[in-house]
Length: 140
Image (cartoon, rainbow, N blue to C red; front, top):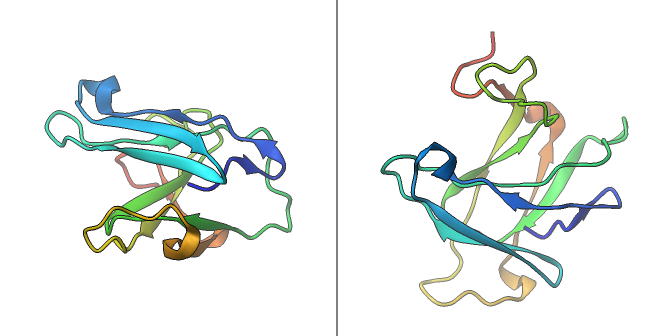
């Protein structure tokens, strides 16, 4: 995750894994030059999720229509979620989280990944393509 700041504000990242529900997934994150390194193992017995989050101190200006992301993947699909931070996306929330799938490519060919930018993927997520979510239930 190369974003250490957004709209000129530093992002304070923290992990939230399935341990909050009794799961056994484990992750680590570390700020590195030009990005954030997020690694771990998902254990689908008793939970099965990992996440990394950062509150945003400021909102997007009205003329901003999306976000450009650069990332290194492992061939799996992840989710980008944006919310207002007020329990958005939970089953009891009044406001949804907004999601987009983030499919990744595994460019390692079974080798250790180079830490240069040659194998980074880049995508643009347009805000009007985000789908609302209230936790496990569909928006009504």
